Length: 93
Image (cartoon, rainbow, N blue to C red; front, side, top):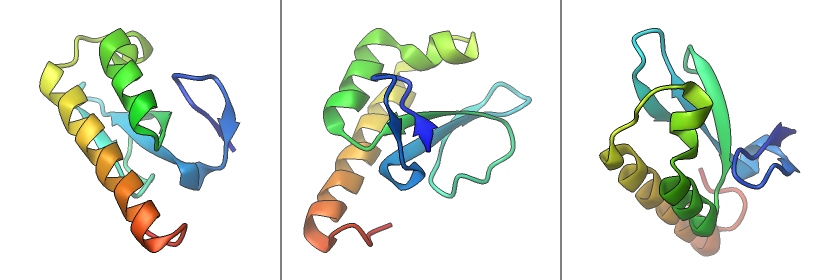
């Protein structure tokens, strides 16, 4: 179980996506959940991703300024994962 950074709810890891900041302060989406660095989790729901984008929650969580492009990529990634889940069920990765 991990905590969704937007809602504060505890959810199973497979229902979340990990966002990681490495030592060079590069922030990226970590679909494997195994990249080195500090991680924060976001629910695989488009509404949560858009809220994270509007509130810039990862800027606050990691204490750095993150480019707007990252948030756009995150919303697209979550939207894609949600669509895959709808098409293929819970087993989709």
